[in-house]
Amino acid sequence: MYDSNKTRLFVHELGHRFPRMGDPLYNDIAAHMTDIVYGKVQYPEPALAAASAEDGTANAVAE
Amino acid sequence: MFLRSKLPRSIELVMLQAPIKTDKPADADIARVKGPYYQWWIDAIVAKGPEDIEASVHAGVAYAAKYVEEHGPFDAVLGFSQGAVMATLLTRHLVQKLNPDAPIEPGQQLKLPWQGNICVCGSAIPSKAWETEYIRNPLSIPTLHVIGERDKVSYLFRRPNVQRVALFSACGDEPLRSLSLSHCDCVPPRRFGSRAKSS
Image (cartoon, each protein chain N blue to C red):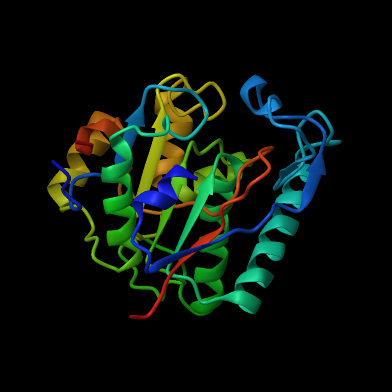
């Protein structure tokens, strides 16, 4: 489920392009983008940020 | 753009075309669309050296900054490919302009030009020196990344510990806080900024 405070990275199955038209991922991307535009996105908690930095992967905080 | 159909009507998308015209598409998929194509900075093949590329990047940032000044304000910026990196560079440029006496440092509270960045298939930061600087002193701004698993252009997955971390770090105080600007390299339509309509 989409969570604006945890979701930062959206991965689709294609290559260098937007996700396929109709991909359900668009719902979450649009939701997060809307939250950003309206200033509702909070920065990740320090512990979460540290975990992803240690891990070295963006997916550490992606849903 | 399919994404547009998923956004509330209160969000207006404003497109900005990149300034450099080229007849060379970024990849085979894009080649299916008839050119010309547009890009934010010149290719390494065309450039005489790294200085050439950096000069064209600076010109691109100035071009986009002028557009923002004349047509803004915007609430967020969205970029595809090279445009995602340009969004990042532009945001830093504007932050420095808004905070002339405050260096970009971790934890520094700075005035921001918009609420955040949306980066789709971000490619590599076109300068090793900038990349190092951005990792050392990232901006704190909400950012969203969209990446394709089989993306061969962005390098974000081929070089997970270098370019990906660099791009994600460019605008955040942790690896997922990077930011980026508009458009894409070599695809006709460019995505520049989004603006929330007042209700």
